[in-house]
Image (cartoon, rainbow, N blue to C red; front, side, top):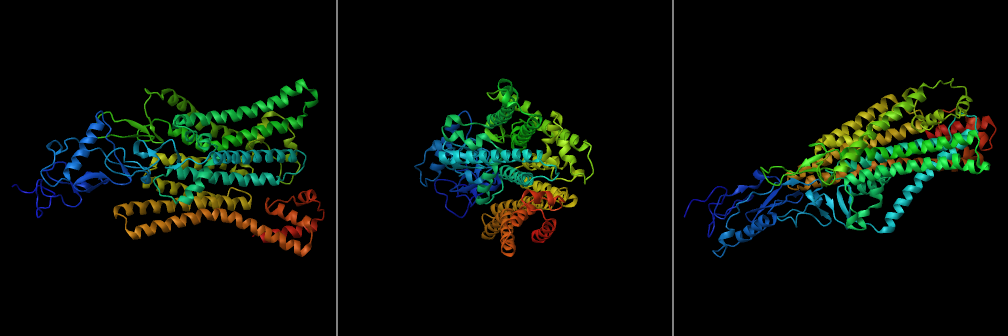
Length: 612
């Protein structure tokens, strides 16, 4: 008999082995000492005297003889449970090193265990269980079963239909303004400015939910975020080709290239349509020859639709391009299987199926993505040049209502190019003509910049919350938007994003505390409370719009009962959803058949009081 080794219970009988290990200890030798689980890795749990990976963590036996080493460890754990002398001496000890344990980006995808086969939950596969198999699709940081084909087709058709409807409405608005001598924008223009705010909100929230996969966001918020991502026009995510067959699985590099090709295809389609309709067809059929006004209108609409496509796709395309830049410790992560392992492979964080090297099969795709990085800088510079040129264009006094119409009668291609950028600055004050570029910078920092500060750590959430608060304070201080309704809509969207990120920081902090305390009931309750608050904060943005619509209907019904005049109700709707400070009420009234200025003035006053 010998003295019980370190880490064992010396008061218990040894039998045909060393003394049993203390709770939370493990051994790699049947007659050797025991070691503490927490001293080796926080991702290990020790039961029955052998180590296993906890849920939410991952390891792999990835060596040249990985199957043999893994089987040796399985045999050792099995023989360790035999209390008598019938154990095999060949499995008395495990001489190899244990793999390094990593925390999974999505803890729910990692089941834990001992072998590689039992490490991931159903639908998850690959390094850190971050990939999805052929029967599942990526749903932010998780994997969900592929939806039916009809649902995917319906979602794609609905998104494309809404975008086409918006572009058609803007074309009709341009056509209406060409025939008016008023500097007041149409209702469609002001609805488009609100749509731009909603698009910005959707882009940022979708980017935040995608980047901050570490935060256990409420499932209902993730479901809403999956619809918000449709605004990004990501063709690969909407089509989900991997759901058809495993051979159509597309990695991050291929997704970036396909999305860029899709944008180029849409822009070329607009260009080809314009030249076929207004250049080639008039040469063959003179009766289709347009006048200067129609030609300018078509050119302006095509250019503006092109800018809209780039505006919608820029945040997600930039995020994909920057995610494919093989920078070590930024977009790439090293996964060593064992301590002291030489030449550890580097994987792309955005897609762990792609290794960060230029010598493999993805060499050409890496070079293409590098060349596309020019797009990240070139598009903001083009917008800055166009907005600067628009700002430097000579303007008349504010009371000259006919100037804008005269200026738009200039049918030059350069003027049409500058006018097509009007949707970017029309809802800002003249001195804040550059503010949309600040919005682009905000989207860039909240969707792409988080990766630099650490999207899988608590610091990433805290930095994102700080950035959101800074832009919220800037907007509240300078008030760059001239329309009151647009100002409050943008302020509310910034407030919702800021509060969501601050609450996300608390949720991530509670998650860390929850794991340290091994699932205390008070921490679980706090996480549920924070999740409910996040849902309420994001629902506030939708409730605001719904409440405004209900209030408008209430005011209109009240006026119908009081005056029984339908034309005044129509005018009230137009006034409520357009610029509150506009002085062009007579021209608007003439469009709906109301000519009495006193009636318009009283109705405008009532509209102001109702709106307030």
